Amino acid sequence: MISEKMKGLVRNNSVIRQMFEEGQRLSEEFGPENVYDFSLGNPNVPPPDRVREKAVKLLEEEDACSLHGYMNNAGFPEVRSKIAENLNRRFGTAFHSGNIMMSVGAASAINCALKAILNPGDEVITFAPFFVEYRNYVNNYDGVLVTVEPDPGSFQPRLSDFEAKISAKTKAVIINNPNNPTGVIYREETIKSIAEILTRKMRELNTEIFIISDEPYRELVYTDTKVPFITKYYPNTMVCYSFSKSMSLPGERIGYLIVPDEAADAEELFAAATIANRVLGSVNAPSLFQKVVAECLEEKADISFYGKNRDTVYEALKNYGFDCVLPEGAFYLFVKSPVPDEKEFVSECKKERILLVPGSSFDCPGYVRLAYCVSHETILRSLPGFKRVAEHYGLKGSGV
Image (cartoon, rainbow, N blue to C red; front, side, top):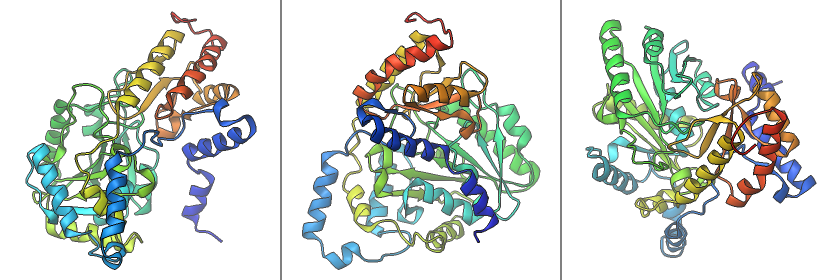
C-alpha cells in the first residue's frame, strides 16, 4: 500500500512525461521522422567538445578511487572554489567555496533549499506560469504553494498581486528567470521591485523571507537583455543552477546551490542545505562531472541553433494566426489556445502527431507549451500540421 501523498502523485503523473512517453509510442508506430514531439525540454545540441575531452582525460589520468569516491556532501572544495571564482568574475560577486554546494541538478538544489527552511504549513510564492514540479517540491516538505497571476499580455508578474499574497506564513519566493514555460525574462526593474516589496514586508511582518532563484536557462538568451543576478539585489537569496541546458548535460544531473554570506543565518542555512543533500538521498553530486564542469566553466552549448528554431517556429505560427509571445530566453514558446479548453487544442494537434503540453500543467490554462529544442528538420516537417490545425480552427493569419 503506497502513501496517500504518493497516490495523488501517481494519479497526476507529470503531463510532460506522459506526452514524452506518448511520443515514444507514436514514433514506434509511425516512425520518429513523422512524430513532432515538442513536449520535453531535452536539449538537442551536443555538449561542447571540451566537456567530452575533459571527461576522457580525467578518467585516464586521475586516481580512480579519488575520482569516483565520496567527498564532503557539499562537493569537492576545489570545484566549488573554481565556480565561485567564475561567478565573481562574471557578476562582480564575492563568493567563496563555502557559499557553493554542488547538487544533483537544479531540481535537487531547490529541494535542498526548501527542506532547509520550510516547516509544515509555511507558504512559498511563485509566479504563474511556473515549472510543473514546483508544487510537488513544496509539497514534499508539507509547504503550501501560493501562485501570483501574470499579466496576460507580457507574462510579467503582477506585483500588486504578489504583495497582497505575502503573509506571516510566507517563507520563500521561487523565481525562474528566464522563465519556463514562456521564455520571458524578468528585467532588473522587476527584480528590484520584488526585492523592495519583500524587504518592506519582512520589516512589517518581522520575519525572514528567502528568494529561491531557479536559473537553468541563464545562458540561453537571444537578445541583449541582461538576466539580473539576484543576490546583488536581495541578500536573502539562494541560487539554484544546472549545467543541463547551458552545457547540454541533462542526464548527468550536475548543478549547484549558492547561499551567499549576506543571507540570514548563512552558515547555519548552508549547513542545513548540505545535510539536506545527504538525507534526501543524493549524498553528493556526481563526482566525475563535478570535476568536468569545473574545467569547462567558460564553455557553452551553441544556442544559435535554438535561436534559429525559435525564429522559424514563432514566425510560422504567427503567420498561421496563432497568438504567442516571442521568447527572449530558454527554449519554449507559450502559445494561446484557439479554444478555451487548451486540452482540446492539444488533442487536435496530436491528430497531426504534434505533441504539446497543456498550459494548465503550468497553472496557466488556455495556453500550450512548445519546446523547440528539437532538430530544425523536426520543426520544418511539423509546420504543415500546424497549418492544418490553424485552418481547422479558422485562424486568420498571413499564411492561411
